[in-house]
Image 1 (cartoon, rainbow, N blue to C red):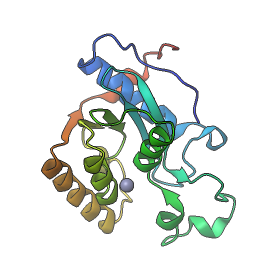
Image 2 (image 1 turned 180 degrees about the vertical axis):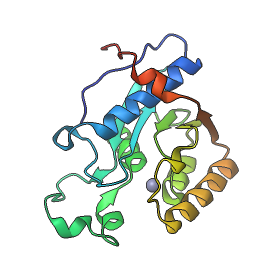
Image 3 (image 1 turned 90 degrees about the vertical axis):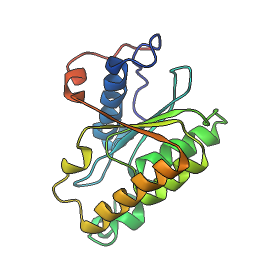
Image 4 (image 1 turned 45 degrees about the vertical axis):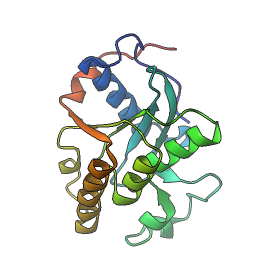
Length: 182
Ligand SMILES: [Zn+2]
């Protein structure tokens, strides 16, 4: 897992904090693979789960699940990647569950809108909020049609589950500001 750094926990609903958490999610995605960063060749996603008190409870990139061999080149081929590489949101939520963290009411910061499968899990776990960068899925020019359809379905599922989806502008600004150590 990437090193533990957190934005300040004091003001929990400020845009600056949302940007800092998204910057943290981006940092998780782009960390070296050996430190939990994403091994995906084109779509590196980071997700950070923050509890209702503004504390980080889990973070993950889209990567191979624990113990699954990421060194095999055939697992990176088109048609295989999505079978072998798990979504960042799923891995972050499972990490929090494995460590018995309180997930209901938490916020998920993720660098790409959740897919339909993740959206179902987010609704089932009764997360309160999902924060994404504005226009996040336009960042990925290579994102295939099936993923666009999946994300659009996911957005509907989040809305029907009562999970608030918030687009946060200009997360790049936050990236220039150093995150404070816990
Ligand atoms: Zn997903």
